[in-house]
Length: 102
Ligand SMILES: [Zn+2]
Image 1 (cartoon, rainbow, N blue to C red):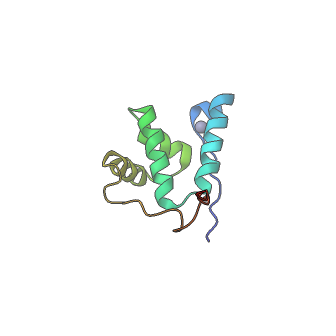
Image 2 (cartoon, rainbow, N blue to C red; image 1 turned 60 degrees about the horizontal axis):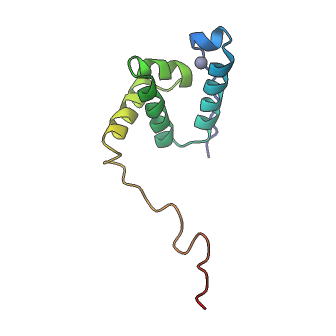
Image 3 (cartoon, rainbow, N blue to C red; image 1 turned 180 degrees about the horizontal axis):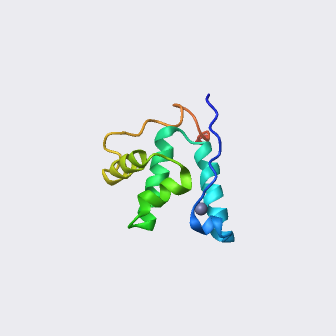
C-alpha cells in the first residue's frame, strides 16, 4: 500500500491561527491520508458542498487535492454514486452471530 503524506492546510484561517478551523482542517487531512482515492474525493465533495459557493476551490487549498478530482467527487455525490454501486462491505456470515432459537 502506498503511503500518502498528510497534507498541511494553507488556508487563510489556518495561517492566522484560528484554533477550531486548524483542528478541523488537520483532522480532515489526517482522515484523508487513511482513505482511498474515491473516498478522499467524496469526503472533499461533502465538505465542499457544506461550504457552498467557492467550496471546491477552498477544499483544494485545505486538502491539496486537484480541482478536477473534487469536481468529480461532487458530481458523483450529486448522482448518489450512481456510477459507483456499493459493494458488500462485510463478508457473508460476518458480523454478530445470530442468537440461537430456544
Ligand atoms: Zn485550513
